[in-house]
Each structure stands twice: as structure tokens, then as C-alpha cells.
Amino acid sequence: MTNLRDKAAHLLHMYNDVELLQVVNVWDVASARTIAALPETRAIATASHAIAESYGYEDGENIPLELALATIERIVAATDLPVTADLESGYGNAGETVRRAIGIGVVGANIEDGMRPLADAVAAVSAVVSAGEAEGIPFVLNARTDAFVFGRDRPVDDVTADAIERGRAFLDAGAACVFVPGRFDENTVVRLVDGIGVRRVSVMGMPGSLPPARLHELGIARISYGPMPQRVALTALQDAASALYAGGSIPANTRTLP
Image 1: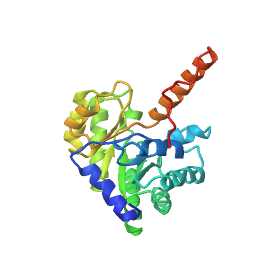
Image 2: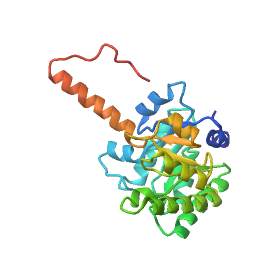
Image 3: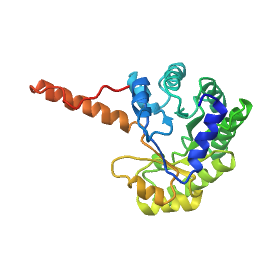
Image 4: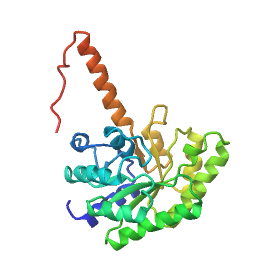
């Protein structure tokens, strides 16, 4: 699949499909090829935190946009699958950043609200949607609200209400789905899905999260894993190095990956 419009339409279909969309986030060409080689992989998603970390930058738009886009471009070139990119808050101009991302072959993105005033956050969503329309593709926006990220010290009912209000507004502005990162119990997931919509909520899988099968049953559209896959890989690397220093050898089941 090489046509951007077709890739975008296919990605949007995956959000709306009855099958749960799971994306194991990647941060470079090697990780992208490794994940793309799995038959279960239907789309590739980048992780901004992991990309920044790989270059020695802290998360939060500290990595230069040019470097981030250059890395994403190499990932796009390494696979025929649709690529959705984590573009943080849009680097001050979400519409223009998405326009540039489309130019390198990206067909979907996460854009976070940083709990900016709701009108400003909605304007950013509208700018992203308009950028896709101007480029002739149904760009797939997974609009992120940081209600739970920024609201850890507030009552969970209030934070959930904020997430629902923002999520509905983002969908009304043209987002395909609403990304609500956090570690949720079942009751909170049910409230988010009831408030935002069935198959309109995206969450992050992390230690202690509900199992994917249960999240699917509760109406979640997408599960991503953010920087966790990179942390899993680096944990394995450090454990292997410790074993080698202790007199061990490279495991016999080590594979030559794409």
C-alpha cells in the first residue's frame, strides 16, 4: 500500500473496526522493522519519548523537530504499513507540524493538549484536521488529553469529567479518537467509554493496566504502549550484559531480526 490516502483510510478503518487496534510503539528503523515483521502488526506507531531518549533528549519537545521528523521519515520508509506519529503538542503549530509529517508519509498522529484552555486545544485539533484536508487525505488524529497526567492530585471524578468534556470537544472538531493516558481501573474505563463513545477512546498499556481483551470488551478502540517497548528492550539489553559480565554467553535463542 503506497498511496497516502489509501493508507490513511485504512488506518481510520482500523480505529472503527470491531477488532482492537494494538500498536507496539517504535523509535527507530530497527525497532520498526522488528515490529512490522510480526503478522499481527497492522500499523506502526512512533513514541516521541522513546525517540527523544534515543538521542539523549528529555521528553516534552526538547528534541528538535527537524531531528524528530527525520527519524520518523526513516521509519516510514522502512515499512509499507500505515504510520501514525506521536508529535507531542505540535511544536507550537500543530497544523503546520502535521502538514510536514504528511509530507514524509505519516497518515495519523497523536497531538496532546497539555491541558491548555479548551478553546486553544480544540483549535489545534481543527488545524490538524484542516491540514489533512488541504493535503487531500483523511488524516487520522488520535487527540490526546492530559487530564489524568496533570490531575493526579485531584478527585478522580473531576479528572474523568474533564477528560470526557475535552474528548467530546475533540471528536466534534474532527478527531478520530481520543487518547487518555493513565493507569485506570475498570470503573474509570467504563465511564470514559460511556462519556466519550464506544471505540472512540485510546489508552496506554503499562504495568498494572487492564488486559487488552478486557479493554476491548469495554469498548476501547486502541492500545498503545508509549516508551514501554523501548524500556523492555533496554531492560533485556542490560540484563544480557550483566549475564555476560558474570561469565555467561549470548542466549542460543537470539534471533537475527529484520
